[in-house]
Image 1 (cartoon, rainbow, N blue to C red):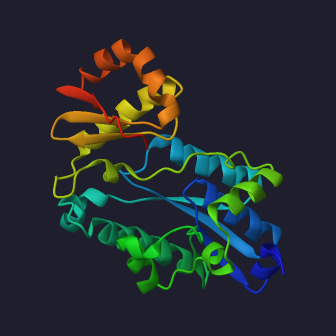
Image 2: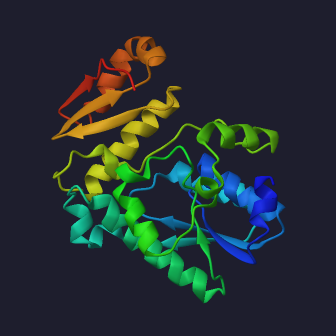
Length: 247
């Protein structure tokens, strides 16, 4: 039984759509299976604009009803204080809203894009997902990230080779307070690196110092753009560092 046939066991599915590889393929497969569905994307201060744009694009491409849900994650002290359980509190906050809106629309089952490659034991956010009875069909069926990329390419989804992306909150050191201004600074910095052609990188925040992490093959690009990066980043941060250990 292939994955699309597997999904036909469900009468309806509300899909948490981030715009990434996994949730985009899940939405495609649900639609292909003929299951009544709707996509929901939660827009928060932790999500950069390109992720929201990709979610909108893929939902339109698949002709699936799609709703953007606004949430203020910065009104929750357990999130902005950025303890080791920040992801748990954030996921619970976000998915509680998503579940509420999906159930209002008559959906009985909410699904996310967690796959079989994800180490759920190391992800506090997964505890929140389980508590809210959100299912993960990709993981339950046994599809790994590489499988999903291959299937996405065959389905002509533009997301098939999109790099994995973690929310902006992960750029802060544990225990460092998350603020709106710092989130804006980080998004601006990462947007600039995107404009130079970098992919699959991170800009980590250490006080008011930015630490850039890139894959090994992009190290030479960093050196080539060194002067422009320094000039741009020093308009935002006190200093800029390059992590010599590749991503």
